[in-house]
Amino acid sequence: MSINILDQNTINKIAAGEVVERPSSVVKELVENAIDAGSNAVTIEIKDGGTSLIRITDNGCGISNEDVKIAFLRHATSKIKQATDLMNVSSLGFRGEALSSISAVSQVELITKTKDSFVGIRYCMDGGIEKIFEEAGAPDGTTFLIRNLFYNTPARRKFLKTNATEAGYISNVVEQLCMSHPEVSFRFIVNGKPKIQTMGNSKLKDVIYTIYGRDITSHLLEINFQTEDMKINGYIGEPVISRGNRNFENYYINGRYIKSDIISKAIEDAYAPFMMQHKYPFTAFHIVINPELLDVNVHPTKMELRFSNQNELYNAIEKTVKDSLSHKELIPEIEVTLQKEAEDHQPIQEVKQKEIPTSQIKMPEPFEEKRALAFKETIPPVVYEQSELFEKKELLKQENKKDIRIIGQVFETYWIMEFDKNMYIVDQHAAHEKVLFERIMKAYNNRTIQTQQISPPIIITPIPSEIDLLKENLTHFTSLGFEIEDFGKTDFAIRGIPSEFSQGDPKEIMLEVLDSLSSENKNTTQKTIYHRIATMACKAAVKGNNHLSYPEAQALISELMDLDQPYHCPHGRPTMITMSNYELEKKFNRIV
Ligand code: ADP
Ligand code: MG
Image (cartoon, rainbow, N blue to C red):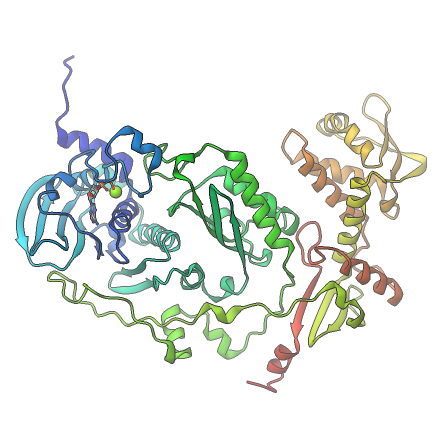
């Protein structure tokens, strides 16, 4: 066996495997370069899922004539000079690997010009081999054209999904770039059709509107937080717009889209009291952190970071998100779908053009028209409806209790109330759950839990795995007001339960709690106790169709309104929904 030293081209091809996994990686790297170059307008065009063409045009600083070839060398970067600079990276790139990797596996054409030079450069390469280097007339800025990605690495090409799927991945990357840089105006064109355009006015909410539409934008809460080392600001979604997966959890650190277990955990812990289990919130916020407290050099595609002070970060996010959720009335509105509103769900471009013809804002286009090699397509302007239209209505405040009028009950479950030109519908089951939950939490916090004796005791026989759980957590149960005795073998006697649950079936409550515990993680924390209580409260609560007299309902609603967060049951279901007088009038066509 002889040992060979690989030539540079082979080395680059191998390295490309890390950085350039698929067309979306190319888009990410090149747009990050455009942002690092100080651009405020970037156009991204793809064809055939990015496999036949990716074109990125920016109006940034450009690459000087003498640097063009150097930029394509491996580990060539203008962003850091030495290892110590890694401690303080403020640019998105720093590894100097993208251009060498991309050019190794595609046909690259670069046209670039700096402000100071009279003429630009056109540089073409096939699979990392130089083909053309010539002067060319060009506006300030840089255009990259990447053609036939992976044409010389068939194994990689085979591994790609369909063009539509690859285009979808690119779209996700572009969306994240738009949200991570609201100060940059992005335009995204797929097979000649404009898909996304952002204004670049630095307003994150406008970007969210462009990408996620009206529904999400009308349910946002603002978050703000600041210390010496850290600043957080942006938006989080009301619990009503929750999702079944984490795809809508967006956050950016120093302008970089990343994934972080610690940040996701902070978000989800803050939402836990407001959200059903296995639901995840919408978030989009920016964290600006002293770069010295970050290690950005831990992942080839820079999707992960290391924080020097994880706890501080966790606490800041958890508190900020929780504060924002706690101080907002979170009553879901009943949707009235009229013809005109149904139109809003059409693709953004057409609808907005129809609605607000006065506020037409054209995409900044300092360079696109003149571009010698520009594509032929003419792109219709996108018109924006300002997101400020979706500000919230007046809040239903606790001190307004005396002005709430309870009208009556329907379907033996829902109570209708009127307050300040709004109709509220309260779910008595959810309301009761919430009230009971808060009572037991209060008793638990104040250590005033009362135990109601059960005589004769009730015997339960949990399954073996639950027996272990019960034994492990016996002290927790005791501190919550249970009296449980180990009868040996597999039997336990319940001799007392918290008095709040006296209406419920003790056996059912216990088994339910054990069941919920067994699906949690092994170690019991404050949070698992909390969830357990929520489960118990739920079981013991008035069932949906139990009869409730008018005075009982009045007392229940009054107690509910006294709570800090009356709007969700412990599982995150709403306790009430609302419909305004205005919406009713619309529904009856009294107003159009
Ligand atoms: P990195 O971004 O890690 O520095 P890249 O391989 O992505 O490495 O880019 C190499 C260098 O090429 C950059 O450091 C930068 O100087 C230059 N460059 C790349 N793209 C652009 C662009 N769009 N505008 C100006 N300079 C660019
Ligand atoms: Mg780069």
